Image 1 (tube, one colour):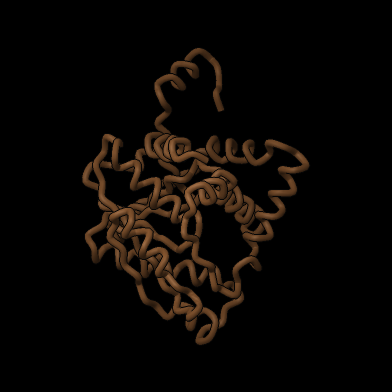
Image 2 (cartoon, rainbow, N blue to C red):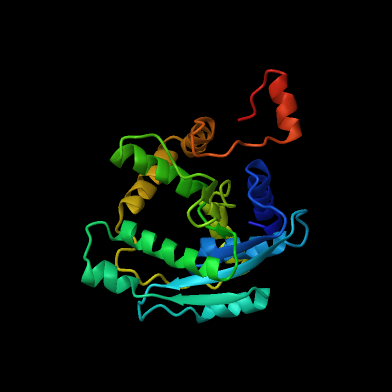
Length: 256
């Protein structure tokens, strides 16, 4: 995927859900995977022309695995001229040794979120950007449906009143397959995830199920995404449709 195409996805999400404001100081969580590296790249490029002015700081939450080496991420941030900090933690000990959990991913996610938020506040950031993409949104909906018995998924934008931070997800419209192509084209320095639970989770199960469903019924993933957007979840912000979409809707047609 070309950078121009990726930026069009990001700008559409930013405009539709008012993700960016003037003087935003955005903390970008960079795990070393293709998604977070692509998000950092895209936001850096978006700075060049987006009408709202914002700054970026990149953070990597180091879980404590000795096999994790963030040096390629550090070099990538230096090339992009983005301030970068590694947040040292002992999360792997807590999750896999001191407090062994039957749901290690859930506990790990909470601890990583807390560490990232603390670092963001320390550096004066008011927003945190996650690299969750369209596939993640649909997978989360299926996880919620299958294992919680409710139809829901994460929001494009969430304000945390207790911290003063706002979480944004600029990759809301980006299909994962496009990110794989972007990674290859722009040679992003992906760092291997050393977590022993990687690839053995409920999310991985749902990801493979969704892939099978989409192969058997082409377009089903897009229809699920459209259903989520149309659901009007209480914690989702109002979608600001582009003028041309509003005009078409007023004429009795539905673009979605």
